[in-house]
Length: 79
Image (cartoon, rainbow, N blue to C red; front, side, top):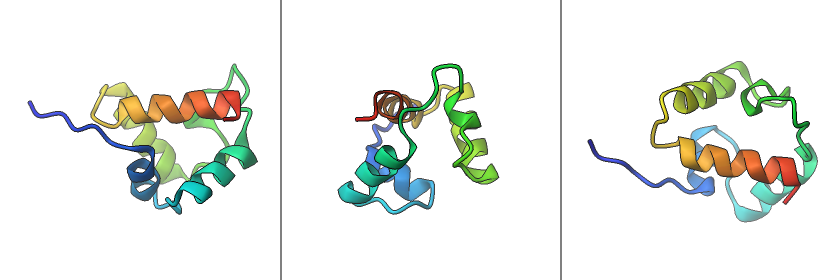
């Protein structure tokens, strides 16, 4: 099985979001800090399709899961 390391920029593009560094920083600033008890996939700012993609990738521990975890940590810290 071949694994790919994806970047946060690629994740935002995959989610259909603006993916420039400044866009990503603005997204995190706008939505952080994410409440500890709220799962990333349940955050209200995702579309249904975005949430389904994130959930699927995390459930399967797929290629995207590491960068999704990174985004989750950044949203919880607000960094």
